[in-house]
Image (cartoon, rainbow, N blue to C red; front, side, top):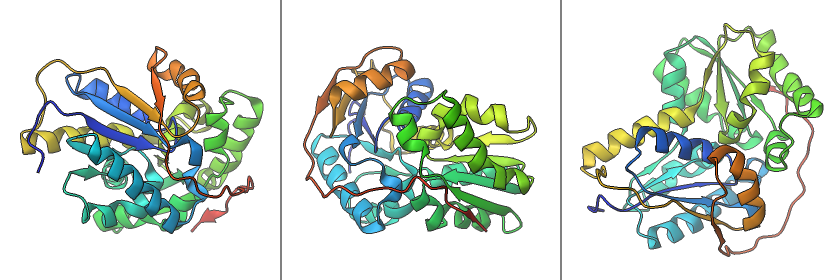
Amino acid sequence: MVRNQNLRIGLFDSGVGGLTVLRQIYRRMPNESALYFGDTARLPYGTRSSEEILEFVREILDWMSGQGVKMIIMACNTSSALALETVREEYGIPILGLILPGARAAVQQGKRIGVIATPATASSNAYRQAIQEIDPTAEVWQVGCPEFVMLIESNQIYTPYTRQVAQHYLQPLLDRKIDTLIYGCTHYRHLDRVFRSILPASVKIIDPAEHIAIAAEQELELMGLKNNGQPLTTRFYVSGSSQQFARLSQQWLGCIPQVEKIYMRELSNFSITLNPQPLDN
């Protein structure tokens, strides 16, 4: 078991989505140091199989464990939904996922809960199961949104087409008269202004990134691993283009990060569908 308070917190995602979690870590725990990995060479995760996701996650966890981190946060809902329970039993380090913190926050806000997520997260039913274990009376509707991640990663956030896509994905949930919406992918916080322009003001939005930061802080306190000293500079790594990640992330970090490329095992490319996924009833 890790006992060094000064070690970094490791966070990973398929791309820039996990930066929303990193920002919450900065906000809640300014003394903590972080290591961030974006698996940009293999994004998006949301149309991958569960077997591929588990393989990717194990590779990343092996690498992060070798970097000497004290905790790992899956800053990716797809990984959290498909791999968390398996890998928690395989690694001797605290590993946190997004699903349970997001579900707990949602049931405190409403009874008619919509989830927008990647197709893999939506089809896993992870949010529905977590929510209904906490509150069996809650109703949950999930929509798989295959286009959002690539639109965000290509910096097409405020285009008319992106708003059209968002309207299309949200409409089935609006038809259900949801009172709460979960961002079931960490990328989606980057589209917050777009979503809020479409949703009624009465719909409460749950960003699991905020709540996993709270859970991480509580876990570190329980283990006596919370750092009270000065933080180290965040280390950023990607499996794809370091320059592209640095340029894209600047708008959310407020600076151009120094990013290093590392090489994960290359897997065959695949094509993704850009057709909207049907509402999961």
